[in-house]
Length: 330
Image (cartoon, rainbow, N blue to C red):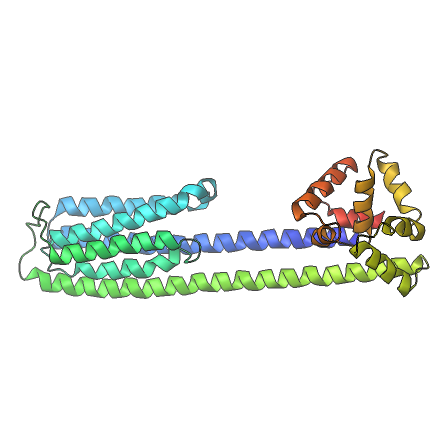
């Protein structure tokens, strides 16, 4: 019962830590979306006030509302986890083409191209380089192609602004440089916060694993104490372990000699257990885990897990109870 409570506490704590980490990352994304919202809102207001370009200002305002929409649905991403990565890639590509459009729209004189670098630096915040390597390559390729194409080719079929005057470009270019630098600094800040979250998760996982290992050692020590209570000497204990590890045909008989009440107690719960299932119960009684059982029975881990699942069903062991802990209590 003690071990059952310990394992349940650890499981609950691990789930709680995972939920907290996920909420923290979602809040971090929310802050990033808020930053984009304010950036686009500023540009839409700036363009309509100083240049009177209502059409482009409306376009930027719609995008601003899109960031608000993403902030509203951020907590529901678990339901659409498979589509989330595709959506992020789509948003990156969309932003790249928006930058390209404004670069051409302002006659390539407003410094809009600096925002390509802001997009590049934002990639590590949303992607994991090990899991999303090809996604990162694709997004980086799209950014680089757009950057080169907009610098070296003229796209006369795209509209050009009729509201910008020659004297306006110097001010707008300075503004774009300042905002691209601000975006770069914000990217670095958010990436640092993301790394801190990941580092914290790694430390929590190490702590949880260490706790489980300590409990397993305590579990083994108590098992040996139980064996000693049953008048087993240290030599007897080592002999049982050796017979089990070498898959000796003498193990089961020797086990029943030292644990005369165990097999009858198991059969009392379900008399339909077959010999191989009783053999597995004996191995679990001496605290062999799945990997250890697979090694000493020349079985695969999956085969052992299947056998343990059938034993769990026959003994009516609840799914939230560790089967080894249940067997140890018999």
